[in-house]
Figure 1 (cartoon, rainbow, N blue to C red):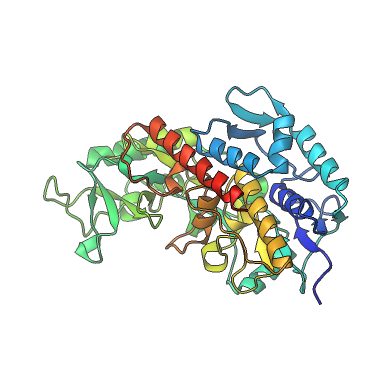
Figure 2 (figure 1 turned 45 degrees about the vertical axis):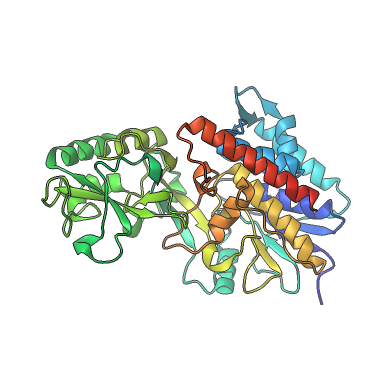
Length: 435
């Protein structure tokens, strides 16, 4: 027998938005939040939608990818974006919030919503016979994480996010870079950046001396050899990288006809072929340092990094294997995932996933088909990214690189972003009109 209400497990940004979207459509929803009974290592107050790190929700400009995503969410009636606007503090063109006021107001709004029941209790098993949204975040409690692992049949969840930077292909200098696979095997799927000895040694020198992000104590314990940051590898010796991820064997530099001293490989990251990730470049460098040091690499002088490398504690599922673009579990259509556990990265991105999962949970509860948002929208492109099979999967934030490439070639970045934003909002407004 089906539960009389939808269930949301986790009262963070994604869970709070999902619950609101369900409730405002007239469906009762029970939200399970483990605070204050149990706290994760990163959380400290009892309120829902607690913002842990920066209070910035990034740019408000629609020519910025996260700004466009916020505008889409406003159009669709996001509660959390409304409260973020109401609790904003001065931050120029960005949207920053008073963290305490924001989470307190979200909690108050959900507590007084008649269709929402909030239960302060840790859930260790996924409820059966219910339409449920799992929005337990990047620090999902160990017992529930084990239950999720059993549900998905994966050997492991990703308990440590070690992602390499991702680059926009059109900003790579192909007078230096070239396509090719090692020893000429395969289908030339990689873009290769050849280096001479001087370039390599200068790069390694800057890499080992670059500033890194300070990890939490609970994160430091979880570093393991398979996710070794490239800057740590480089500190083991000047030649470590060129006998590891930068080994040049099997390649010939077209410019010289000789084997390079070292080589960096970029691997296609999306089906459109306009994004490439840096193979073996998982890193804990600060973002500004990544831009400075990695731009030293031949062919990347003017590269646009649409996502920087990260290395921190982060539980997320292999979403492309398990979810569709409605954040619905393929093997069990009554179960949805939302938030950073799906592989969306960032506050606003989590809200977006919660909104989509909430809308679709209502549809399943009512026996209707789920909604898939168009890929031309930032909401839809994020959902498409985390649900499309790929060789390697790492969390992704909102960026223009994941939107479908426009037919019209526009060189000016600002004008291109303006066009993509206009297209996105027009498409979304048409979706609203169609119901």
